[in-house]
Length: 228
Image (cartoon, rainbow, N blue to C red; front, side, top):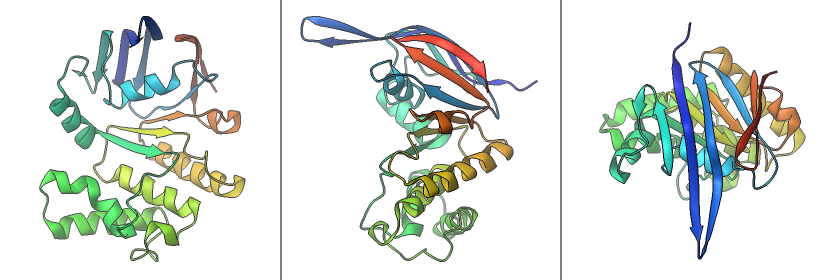
């Protein structure tokens, strides 16, 4: 049986907005096993973005525990969380978050710059991943020379470059036309088939159903957690 890669144990997250305390997450608990493909859904304001920030070690729980790969990251300082993000997580964003001045190959290599790997090794890894997402013919292009679907392929390759424990995707088809969105989701299906652990936040039911499991939030609680 696969081990748990992500474990949330009674996680709460509150924000102080002036005199008002906002409870974004109210005691959320779940496990995600290695190789699972999970979508997180729910209405605006339900806590999806807060949950994604915690999963991505961009923020810390107010209370409760978050174990990533068996390591408790709940109380880590900023430097430690940054190291975890660089080594164990891959991020894919709705807006791609590519550096416009860099080429495709250079954008893919970015996470490797922080790992002190030899330049030739970085370039070889980036070439291999560009080919994996069908962009080996666009290596010298800048992001503004690419379509939205191609930019998202660059972002996927960049997310894979450090061989992460978990790939986190935030509305990965949100800025794409339907045809490009389908192409991107096919890549996610392939990654799942290859054993990658995927967590995807989406408002699109069609995208959410492609995952093998859907966690639905409402008002900071888990409303349902079902197999698709």
